[in-house]
Amino acid sequence: MLELEKFLTEFASALQVVKLYTLEHARSKQAVDKVYERLLEILNRNEEIVIGIVGEEFVSGKEVFFELSKRMKYLISDLISKGIEKIILIRGVTIEELYNFIKLLITKREDIKVDYEKYLSLLEVEHISVGRIKTPDSLGKERVEMKDLQIGEDVVGVVTNLFADILFNETIDVIQTRFLINNLFMKLLNGEFSLLTISMVKEHDVLTFIHSINVAILSMFFSARLNFNKENIIDIGIAGLFHDMGKIAISKELISKPGYFNYEEMKKMQRHTIIGARILLKYVHSLGVLPALVAFEHHLRYDLGGYPKLSYPYKPHKVSLIVSLCDFYDALRLRRSYKKAYPPEMVYNIMLKEKGRFLDPLLFDKFFSIMGVYPVDTVVELSNGFLAVVKEENEEDIFSPKVEVISLSDKSPILIDLKKRKDLKIKYSVKY
Ligand SMILES: [Fe+2]
Ligand SMILES: [Fe+2]
Image 1 (cartoon, rainbow, N blue to C red):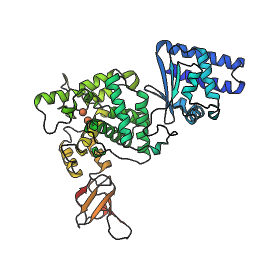
Image 2 (cartoon, helix red, strand yellow):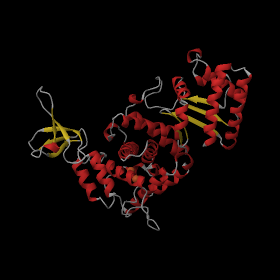
Image 3 (cartoon, protein in one colour):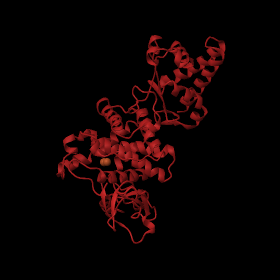
Image 4 (cartoon, rainbow, N blue to C red):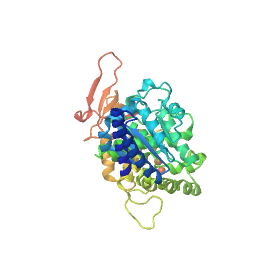
């Protein structure tokens, strides 16, 4: 959206002018008038404009303004320091409201005694609002740093709200989605990588949400290692998060039914691909086509033997194959109310059988060379009877990670690279 970029650029320079000359000066008036004109043009075509700050970038809908954000570093950090992460401009905005909004932005935080929302309403600004993007566990606190964000029940809460909004209000909060995925991505960059387990929540109907978050995390982790760029990784994360979107339309009883489905039930379950794609197609303008495509294709399988049945065969998109593999992996490793989590070696063996069938063989090899058969932190028993914790994968030998032997004495822990120890191997995993 080029005109929004122009608007932001002109807005930022108008702020500069106002700061230099005061708000009453003729030059300021000229600059603000220009911004207002541009704003009206955009609002002619759109009911509202929502601009968010995600990470260090301005975003609006699908658009992330990477270049522009670099040029506007100061404005962004100024807004962040004021606690403004989201600006909404609504059709009907008057030039007085724009002036009052600018006044708010050039005033020091400490000079405004009330919170910004209140301040704007005191000035009778009804068509501009500012606020924070809901960060898990940030409510009531100062802006949390990325590293403070825990992947835990708070994230589940945000995702639950996102899906509830889709189900009951038929809207997707696109900026909130981007914010969430960006936060998870930052955690990955910091080397913090954790998948959720079902044991952390009591209600089992959030299972789909936990699984969705995991698939988003895994897909981003995997695609980062496949050298996709940040922009694409975020898009893939969003597609991962929404891959099972269609399940919101399926009853909880059916989703959490233990054991096998009968024919009717299976057909119903399979419809989640089409339902999900249909919902997500409504958001192509803001989320792009990838989420809808992945929702539609993630059960197609590499050999096209899956569902939905196609009238003519075509190869699923690479991202669908990535998400589909992560989906498969998480479904096996996540403990359900009716089944225990499979041990990692079993997950690997089940997936190995699907190499070239359900799963793309090249992606399969790459995935396990990164994840290893035994993920980091798995407790294993070694062939000499010792217990050890997996510390690091070996890309060249996925069965032989680096492990730390668990010692009951006070001696410093012994790290063993199993790749170099042909006499020693993992017998089986004990805790995972
Ligand atoms: Fe699915
Ligand atoms: Fe899934």
